[in-house]
Image (cartoon, rainbow, N blue to C red):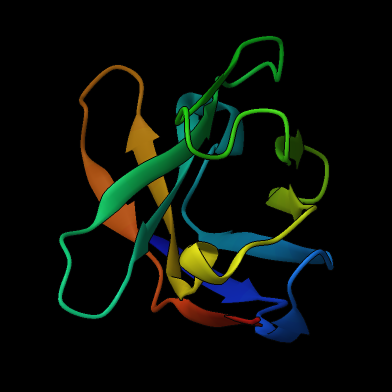
Length: 119
């Protein structure tokens, strides 16, 4: 069982920055998991934002955030980060951390953290 806790959300003006963190705990070998960020805006489906493989050497981004967001991980701290720069009002959403086991594909989700970008 893996527990994920996100933090770092808040209210920011357009053009500003935020850094989200997601700490994993429980019976987990953190490097067994690909870590992902998703987001869900009001009235919309949850969408993929970014992913990072266990070693941190491979990262993937949605086109809408490419060049503005950076995903990273610290395996010693069992933590994944999402640095968000040049934020836009359309980035407003609840951001969720997800862990996907690279062998079993079992998924775990955090409770989400609200990001609001004002224009």
